[in-house]
Length: 191
Image 1 (cartoon, rainbow, N blue to C red):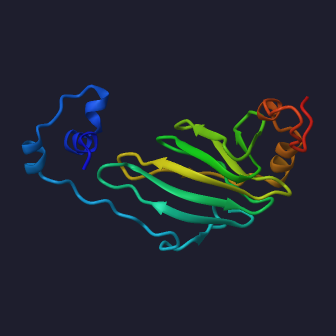
Image 2 (image 1 turned 180 degrees about the vertical axis):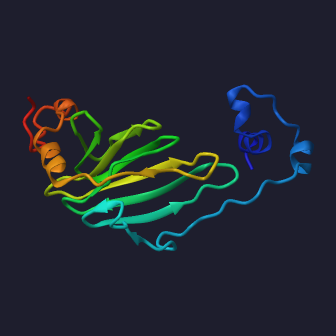
Image 3 (image 1 turned 45 degrees about the vertical axis):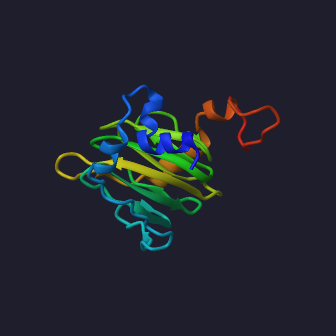
């Protein structure tokens, strides 16, 4: 093995960040942490979004559950065209990473905002909101959601009415649309 590779394996990458190197004898005698676990793609069963929390067809593909070290769970959520969550809040907030399609998210009392692949949405704790697909487009996002000390990660509320959804479609905020590169057509004109 080349000397630089040996040094990196022995002292760890933390040395590159300014930490003190660990002598080779100490590194060799240290207790090893638990091994990595891989949840193979398709090894966890997808579930239909329950009608009490979703309008239209939504599918939840679990990715990982919270554990003793990381108090968040993750899942892909796919909304068919016209599908959406009910209004809800998160006691510790939630990140949404949009991976496919085009959709909307809306905070209570504010205009809906268009979301598309590459967008990352932070839903702050306690903010009433919904998210879902566009009227004619599906949406997939990865949800990363921490739990509170009681294990709760969402508080569900009433459904988004058809009138609220149609209003959101008609009056969505163009802030993400106007930031698109010149020549990009997102199907909606900026105000």
